[in-house]
Image 1 (cartoon, one colour):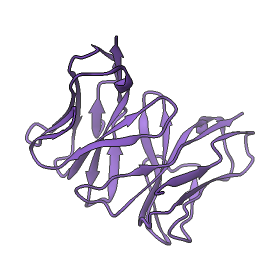
Image 2 (cartoon, chains in turn blue, green):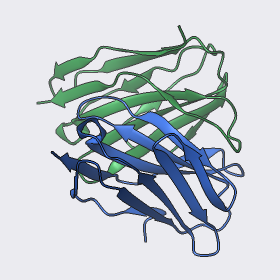
Image 3 (spheres, chains in turn blue, red):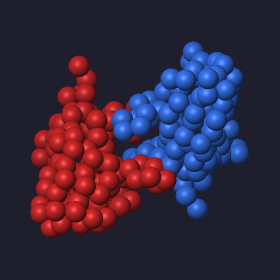
Image 4 (cartoon, chains in turn blue, yellow):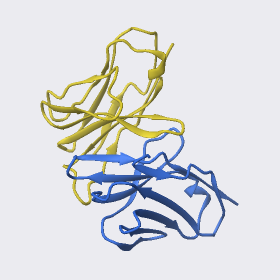
Length: 111
Length: 114
């Protein structure tokens, strides 16, 4: 079982709708959770991080964390064509000083 | 400007010819790491370094070497490259892993081994 799992997609969402991206993780010792966006051929860039149960909002983005169920999600409201990218979920373990990435979900926003 | 710089951006080489991909950061970060990215496999960690002269294997270290003689530099060395090392490589740096640690990535190096 992979440590961090994501549906590879592609996930197709109409412009203006809400895109919902999900990620599950296997290690209950996980400390922090990150969402990165990666455009094709480019390096990942951080969108949000979360480490407490519940929701965290930043503009059109909301990260949700449920440690009991071991999942983290990213909601993108009012989706724009520029949101079309691969979204990587990452989990950090301070005990091991490492960050584990999922394989990413490809999101496509259709006009 | 805070950044992580990798060189070269693109490299085509032949099997067995030693190569080095350089990585340099100007943020005084302790933690640096190398990843490779292959279709459907996401980012897989090759090696990481928690500080100068402290390095450790990641998930896919076979065929790679690293060194950390200075805090800012973390080169990736392929002593005898093989075609299965054809991939997109990223260097990243960050402060010590904590609740809000952000990894900063270099621009990537696309390596082709023929």
